[in-house]
Image (cartoon, rainbow, N blue to C red; front, side, top):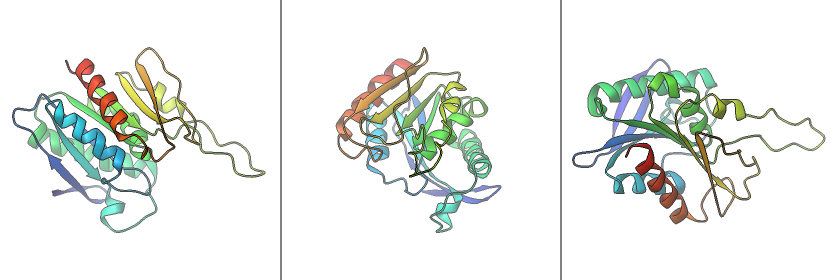
Length: 202
């Protein structure tokens, strides 16, 4: 575990290396949770099983003990600072896949070009917040997925109240049991991630 200075305070990186890695997966957490979420752990375990190192990243607001997430611009800037640090230290020129759960998946999508990622892994992508009673529908975040120019894997709970993103030419969508928490079938999550990684960084 190491702290990395960012423009918005220190982020914390939990490194899970493997011997002679084929590449690295860097994952971010959701808005209100941390890096111990069951779907993140399942994805990390499957990734290491495929010979990839894993870095789980805690955003500065979480390191500072705050529950409410920082604005999108701050999240993106901190994420980019962490990835730059990792590239200059442990990642080197190895293939990099980025991703996260929920809010962390959005950050990975928005910054995929800047991080020069080979692929993006989205766990429980929050496509469209549920409509509040007597309220107008919230805008869709599909544009963030559509903007990614590398292969994307979305693993989504069948009962996710945020909806189901559509598949596309570069985007695979795997439906698993459960809701937005993705706690129901972690085995299916690991299987989907492992299979996809073998294709993206074969």
